[in-house]
Length: 181
Image (tube, one colour):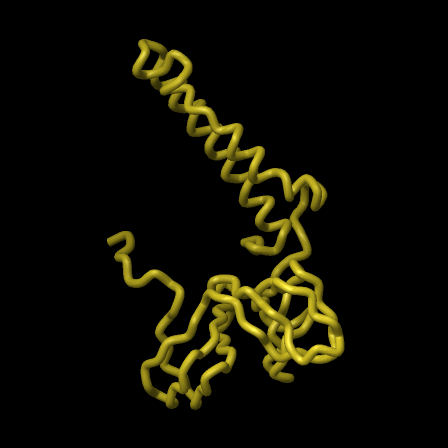
């Protein structure tokens, strides 16, 4: 068996070892979620892995787009350290008690400041450029359906798609949306 669909992923099931209160941030390794309801220890419950939440923070200022980490020891959002919670979606001055965060779909982690190969400006334009560059030669340029060399054009198509996907993944890593494996 390769894989069997289980659920959409906006929520994941957990059985916590200790009681969880509504609004608690739950971390399991690099998996991060927010409990919307109270969950008793040892009972099945669910935590949200997507959505936008106002999260308690210290006296740190955040700008929209900044990475937001969860410092479990302090029970607050932080600008570094801890597990990556998500991205700030609205500027938050240091004097504010919360920061508005869009969760990373459960995929927390140490995050990264970028990836090798290119500047942040290049990474930001890469997804659109990569997607627009994908051309299916096997269909449009004398390919399989118009008498061309179907195998050669298919290989060229797959190579182009691979390169485009890799470019998009590189840009997502540079923005901290994905982390390096």
